Image (cartoon, rainbow, N blue to C red; front, side, top):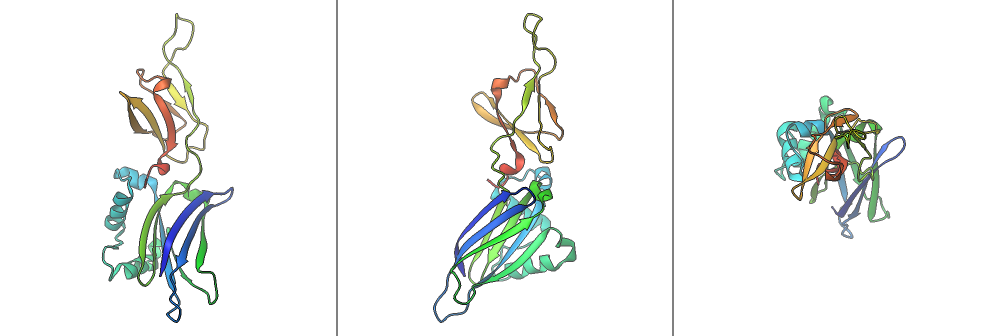
Length: 222
């Protein structure tokens, strides 16, 4: 058994890292505690297509669309193992088993590494032991709270300045979906932007209306 599960993630220069930490619950003279960690990656576009964003919605989506039934304590562990054993799922799933080593530290720290191409994936993770079962949904934390952009265009002032359609342009890689957060009548409005480096705005939108632009994955699961 285990407790106090903590999950952090980061993007290094050549890989993605998911760091797990938990404390083993060990009774002297009892069996050696162990657990399994199941982790499945899901392209964010699949969730976007079905308008799925929150933790609870994503878990329900996984159960319905991936066929992973974790509702029943009697079968949830074997269902995860069966899903992993299917060769069609091996490219997107991992299943690791960990055991408290004799005389080892009661705090376990484990690292899962993924390729940089998984930066636009959402991670569905289950960690379970004999009497413990926890499910988490998260995206890789890239430490980017907002995406830089350039604003251009608008009406001419006395025929001398400005002109052209209003637009915002980006200089990031463009491999991840972006969300424009703007303000309308004192409320924040979220608009998922199409792919590409340039997005044209309605003429009624001013630069002051734009709050920030973020990656979609930073919002999914929160």
